[in-house]
Image (cartoon, rainbow, N blue to C red; front, side, top):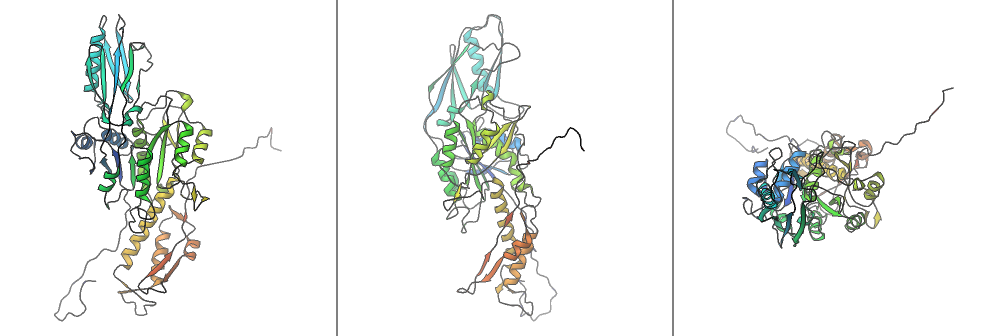
Length: 491
């Protein structure tokens, strides 16, 4: 209470303060490239609420705009920020050469990064005219349904279309260009020839964007970059010693990144980082993946992002298997659809998994961290992604309860006259016990947890109270295993 105890003049007054009302908030931030045409400077971060915001801040057709569109399609209410990572190196350049056009014309369809470019070709149209039409379609492309533009700009000379990635770097090597099979004849079959004349080169650094995040909380970080240097930065950014999970920062959070490679190399890369602060979203180097990997990681993580904040209702603890991911298409080669054996092996080796439904939907299978050991011994405590966000919810909830009830107090062994200015270790334990009981969707076995809870004054520093809590977390229901016994007839 702010009203002094030594007043003399008559007054009837009340001081006003909050009794404490905890609400968990989880921010998502996308790390990727923007364009000079966007208002967000390199190394900057900004709140991004809508497709219009993404286009204004990052530029039309930019990586960040594409990542935002993919994320927003999978989460309608999640708070999303974007961080512009400066590109560096060389932009990839490819050519599309138009050969002999069918004399009868027809419809030509070209897929670029999962977006369909359709050209109506009149009978007798020349290769030069078709090339000009492709060039115009690429530069003017806009998906009015999703808001997507293409990741390339285009020029044309005679029958050769030259496309250039909007950003510098090796990332563009993974952007898919494909002539799809149609129900009718695709007029581009055997007509278009693709070549890479300048391979993308250069790897960016997320360091400046991480620095720009300062002390603001960003519990979900989705990075477009899965190289070892950048994931090392993300891991250090979150570490338990001096990073966001350390006692000095208490900001928490987790980083997700994409990786495209062979099965063997994916596992090797995941096992090389034994940490519960990183999650790899994998794709195969072959198989025909239409959407770029930065779209995959944005879509898949955003699909479950709202559950990460759901401590009060237990959403944070849910199994996530079978959730359809909006905007992703399955690999064209069914040999690269993850079967059960592949998924089981990946999950045992720190690689998250997805699967393909019978209707062709891309489904989340299981998202995990890369933790393998603790102090050199095998340990799966922090393997499930649910545990990371359960723990951050628990810590936030406990801190909020302690702050509401015990801030600006003096500590005493007892408080016989119930002075408001005093608190005791018994009072503090009661607060913690009550808080634990209010989180049944996150932790369980409350009686045993409260009995084992230790709250005591420090023997060397009388101003300090030491707390130890053994938390038993609720677990996602991943496996239902039953037995059916068959009979000819019951006796």
